[in-house]
Length: 208
Length: 277
Image (cartoon, rainbow over all chains, first blue to last red; front, side):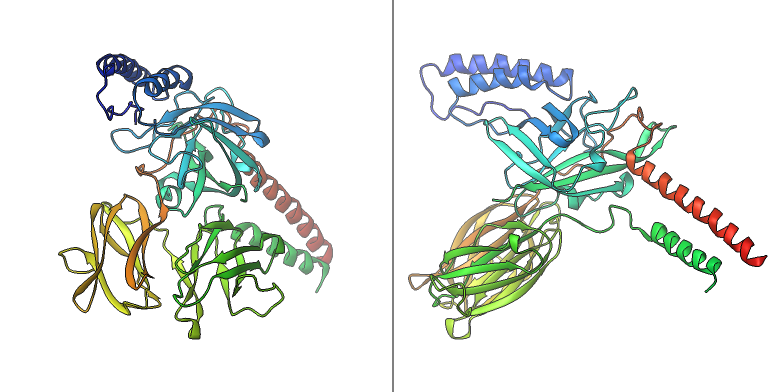
């Protein structure tokens, strides 16, 4: 899911120039996307954001840009992740970085907003190491591209075999804004070099 | 009971506890959701009290809820809640007009609605669906709170209705209906009483609420719940094993439990051999 600036609603004198600029920046964004499944937010987003504000009246879709989990010492920028051709969610390439699923709502908007991170790399702990042991009630803050910060508290931690992944429970309808933090856990299959379970943390907004 | 038997009993109990402890994924945890609705056309605005039986700190009040109002959902800890309606402004100590109890389970959502005419006002607890609709469909139900149309059918304009004979004060179950933008038509005795253009999104659940507005029926679409716009297939590969040697901490807990069992076995065997002597 790209942050294309939407088509201008009205044709104006500067529209042609604007379109050209948008095309160049769009191409740059596409290149970035091809280079990595997780786009570094600093470069791509800032450039696209400036153009959309200056030339296109359509508001850019809101994305998650940074994640803070004080209890785990997590304070990271968020990239965007998406599904591959087979429909499987592709985690961030860098185990030190977490990624927000661009097919899920922005954190704080109704529905389950999904953030994925590695429990470890080949070398050591990843960004979501220790997630399986996070305390209920632990605060989680997510910064959004519109400047808002959505604050959640952990209400559930569970792990499931990957081959029985509870799709409905993770991605299905919920009545309000919720957050899903997903990583790996359980037994590590050394031959396949993969963990056999997923750890899922559910968080809801701090009480109104 | 000899000492050895007692140790065996403790041992068996402990073993049973360890073995029967459900995997973390078995019982759904998390929040329950509650919302309130005033669906009684001739009942004046009310203060709705929601009292948590287990934790008074979780209680709250929605003041001045008028006919047709549907509150936002509120995430609450699972448990029992007493919902009471009092006339707006009435003292909290005064007896409620109606009240009911909701057993709110984790991972479930409920609409508690004041329904019927004022003379027979009741509080209904509706179970709100949170299941994913079938691909290409949205889940929709109809809640008839319009006494001016006591029995209605509901469906897509020009097609067979998917909700039939929906009586005033009742709600239908959920129907999976096509996504996209189309006209919803409400008919009573074959006559169209309301039309509403609706846009239904994927992975979403809706309620169509019928209310009396100035002597006519108005249909309103409420989006109750929504999921991700795109639904990934299966789990996520988020580990390369760099910390698998030290083991994730919950594995360490399991190992610790096993060692405790080991020690107890040793104690039991010793006690047993001593008892035989």
